[in-house]
Every structure is written in C-alpha cells, then in structure tokens.
Image (cartoon, rainbow, N blue to C red; front, side):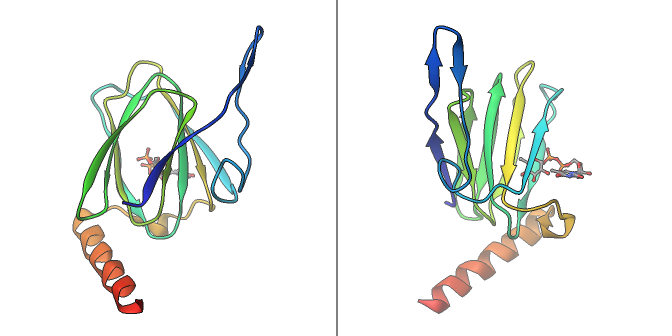
Length: 141
Ligand code: T46
C-alpha cells in the first residue's frame, strides 16, 4: 500500500506548541501546493478519487476525520486526530474522507500544482489503472 504515517516532532514550551514542516526533511517531497479543507459536514464524505501522479501529505489540524485508502487490492482505514500525525499518500491510491468531527480542519500538502487531468474519479477506471501499473512494475523486474 502506497501510504505511510509520519510522526512529526513538535516544539513545545510553556507558551504552547509549534510544528514545522520542511520539504524533503519531514515532508517526503518538494511542496508545490497547500490547501485546506474545512466547514465539512459530518455525514458527507469527500475524496473518492485517486491521483495518477501526485503525492500528498495530510495533517488534521483540528478535530478528526477517517480516511479509507485502497490500492485496488487492499484497503486500510486511518483515523487522523492528531496534528503530529502526517498521512503520506502516494500516487494511484483511492482515498475517501468521511466521519468528519465538528470543526475538522485538514491541511493537505501536495508535490504538484492542481491539475484535474491527473485525477481518476471513476472507481472502475482506477481499478483498471492500478492493474496496469502493477503489471508494468512486474514486467520491469
Ligand atoms: C485529495 C483530497 C485529500 C481546485 O481548484 N484546486 C485545488 O488545489 C483543489 C485540491 C481542488 N480544486 C477544486 C476542484 C473541485 O472543483 O475544488 C473543488 C473541490 O475539489 P475535490 O472535490 O477534489 O475535493 P476533495 O475534498 O474531494 O479532495 C481534495 C483534493 O482535491 C484531492 O487532491 O486528495 O482532498
């Protein structure tokens, strides 16, 4: 599965806490874009797509949210509920975000600019693409 949880160190003192994110240090790629998701609705899911090329690192800054990750063969459920927890998702991974708590704020770092053409929003197309990339990887071995 092309994802991992990265634990981010915090810097804390009596005034509060601080977290710093740096390209190719604690974030495993060069950051080209940052976006936020907020004002979410508890029973309405988001996502339900994969990316052909882009990678993302996601932190839940406030509240919590569930992620369902799927590589076409296996599925995993992750709960993001801690700003020190960064979810890295590589390319060709179907994701769905759901079960948002009140005041959930997701910050998403991406390694590329927004390009709707690199989204796969149809699950059958995703399954075909994931089979194809698995076949190509095996062929290269
Ligand atoms: C992802 C998950 C975690 C833009 O114009 N620029 C942008 O940078 C982004 C991210 C989106 N948009 C537009 C595209 C849609 O018309 O904003 C609208 C909502 O995007 P979407 O329905 O894709 O949002 P989510 O929450 O389903 O997914 C987003 C990201 O798009 C996606 O890359 O992995 O968050």
